[in-house]
Image (tube, rainbow, N blue to C red; front, side, top):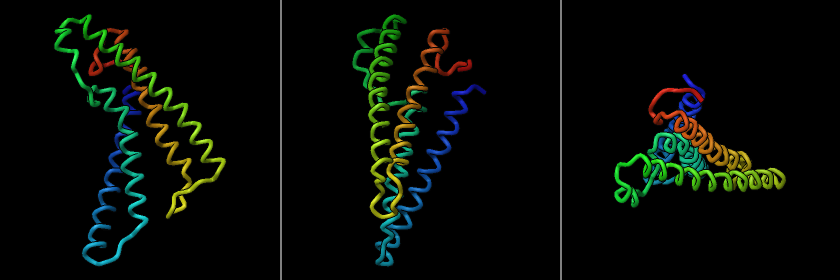
Length: 165
C-alpha cells in the first residue's frame, strides 16, 4: 500500500467517524429538544465542528479521485483528445494548488493568532486553534493529493492505477 493510500484511508476513517458522531449527537439533541423539552447546547457546538472538520478532511480524497465538484463547461468543446484533457488537468491543478497554498498560509496565521490569544469556543471552552488546525490540515492534504496526482500524470498513470508516492 502506498503512502497516499494510507493517508487517504486514515482521513476517510476520521471523517466518517466525525460524521457519525455529529449524526448521533444531532439526533439525540433533536429528540431531547422536541420530545423532552430540554436541549444540550454543547451538542450543537460539537455537531457543527464535527461536520465542518469532516468536510475539510474529506476534500483530499474527493480531489484525488476526481469526485470533487467540477463544472465541465469546456470539455464538450475539447472533445476526447488527450491534449484537451491534459490542458484541463493542468489548468485545474494550477488553480487549485494556488488557491490552497493561499488558504494554508492564511490558515497558519489564524492558528497562531488564536493560539496567542487563547480563544476558545463559547460553550465547551475548546481551544479554537485546534479546530483551525484541523481545517488547515484538510487544506494541506489537498496539496498532498495534487502532488500525488501530478506524479501519477508524469508517470503516465491515471489516478486509479497503481504506483507509490
